[in-house]
Image 1 (cartoon, rainbow, N blue to C red):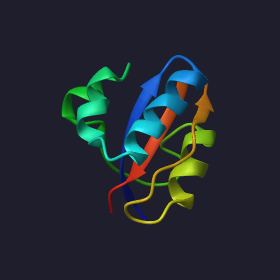
Image 2 (image 1 turned 60 degrees about the vertical axis):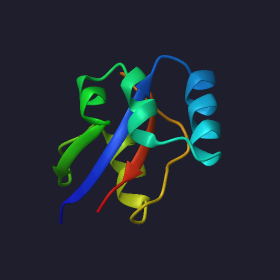
Image 3 (image 1 turned 90 degrees about the vertical axis):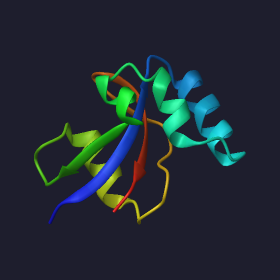
Image 4 (image 1 turned 90 degrees about the horizontal axis):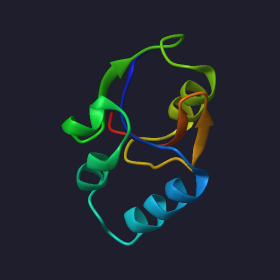
Length: 88
């Protein structure tokens, strides 16, 4: 099984929480993704489709727990803090 997600990667938990607040207030995910530390930010945070064992464990666990259209809480990995959105 593969899922399709986008994400925004930032350095701190505080930044991630601020982005999540902006998203909940209606700000577009693709616009906020431009500030992502990940190169995917240029594509609105789109990571494409991926299956199990392709992402770091914490990221994968959070991503696969989401339903289509849902946002994650801030997720910490070795790369920083992520807000994940499940697209499909």
